[in-house]
Image (cartoon, rainbow over all chains, first blue to last red; front, side):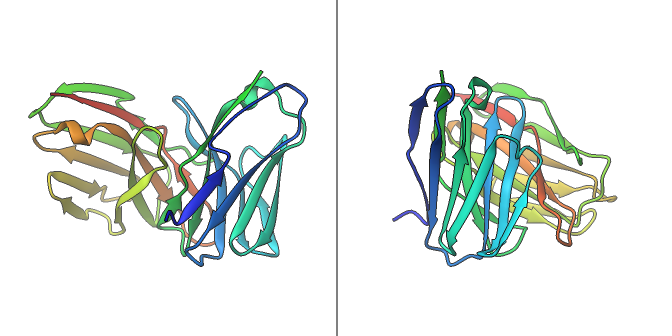
Length: 111
Length: 111
């Protein structure tokens, strides 16, 4: 079984809809991250959490929110989706900052 | 915002050729990681370099961290189709800072 899982793997939604992407991990790590990936831009950090009570904005947090429900679960919400949020979204976990373990990604299309 | 620029952005070569991918920044990093991402999957860590001038080898892959810890290179000898993927560097500036990912190099090795 995968250490980091993401649901859904693919999602098509319409402008203005609220959607939630979920991430679960079985590695027992305290640190969790949400990234988005766009061609030519690499991975950009949306939010990160170093433990259940710690939530921090990344470089592109506008239009997104997160919830750390438990050590193993970190969800990302788009309150009102817009087309330029079309991207590949990755969740990651780490024990330290040197090594991050990524989920398989969620491909999101906002029409 | 710290920037990590990778070059080239795209590379298509024949099986058996050698290649070098570069990762450059104006910032100093306490460590730098290289990841490989295959289509439909999340990035997977290949190596971490920590010391300026450090060279690490992973089979046909050779990683070098610049003396000033601002840049790094990845050299692949006798490339194989299985090396095809997106190569990402990531720099850790230490402390409570997040990791910064590079823009990525997409490598295609043609049989």
